[in-house]
Image (cartoon, rainbow, N blue to C red; front, side, top):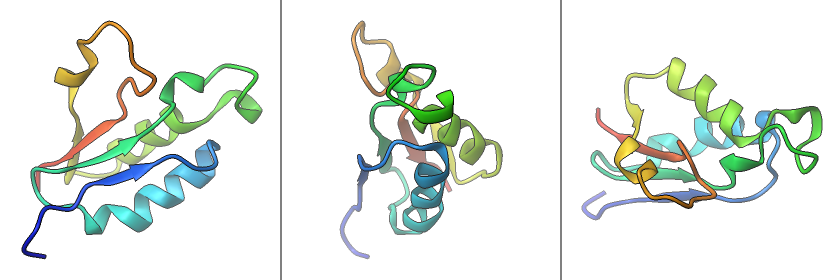
Length: 91
């Protein structure tokens, strides 16, 4: 596309669902733009079944691709619900 595409994922917070979303929507993201996975802070809490949620999905997705990387610049802010959730398309 001629315009930049950013994808924001904020639906069911299970690892399986978020990983499916990442695989489905990642091809739509423009180089230099982002997929933002929200609520990565929920992993390990009672809000996420089996204690694996968005962050576990991010880690598995990143391990299997060279097209995206976690943008750690965003993580430097003191408060965020999306730690390690800003995935920048680099390829």
